Image (cartoon, rainbow, N blue to C red; front, side):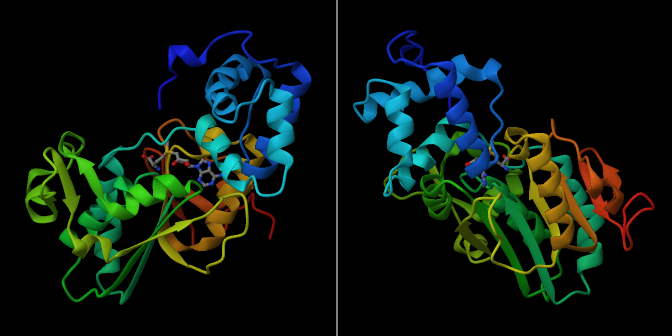
Length: 288
Ligand SMILES: C[S@@+](CC[C@H](N)C(=O)[O-])C[C@H]1O[C@@H](n2cnc3c(N)ncnc32)[C@H](O)[C@@H]1O
């Protein structure tokens, strides 16, 4: 998502410091998003198109609109405007190498394999996990499921479709491309994922700062380039909740500019770049 120059018209909409503070409070309480005051110009430029689309004259009007019942979709537009959906197949590929070399050998004896792609965007992360597992797990491992969640219903519709521009698939290893990606009939330069992959994945809408209506435990959680939008307190609560959903020995993969911090640190050992492994028992600094 890039900022169009036309979105950054200073002065087109009134945006006071009080409006910004009200918006920042809402973004934090409903979505965990951290908006420092230094981001005010960025917030202006990202939301100006929403005000135009809704025919509003000021950010105060926009806040009033967000407050109304029946504006849940606009609140999601707000998150969408303030975060990005940027993703790619086999992004941060060392995580998929760890999945193959460290996790898969342990999973081979297991009947049930559960992986969570949290903040999956348009699905490339979940499909990359599915390809890695299908390629590496012995054929008998039948009950293998990937839960892929995101807050944004529009991006989830794209993920469920599993169709991508061919040029976006260049990071998929050639052998995997030949096995699991095929041209979309009648749509030049588009490819789609094979149903064998989609059958392993459940895409679902989920706001990570709300309740999680499932139990786990997961063998691995990928939550990459999502927590970066959250303030430190929300991040630490998230790491804690991920720890509770992982089995002992399970892996947590996070984004390249994210770091585990807070009480959950005692639950994990470092297992590679932005890769953490849940201990069998918490480390000494964790109160029991
Ligand atoms: C930059 S993408 C990351 C995609 C993928 N994990 C990756 O690393 O390539 C960030 C995603 O986080 C989602 N997101 C932002 N806030 C969220 C929240 N509170 N709960 C769930 N998803 C959220 C956005 O909708 C977006 O699709």
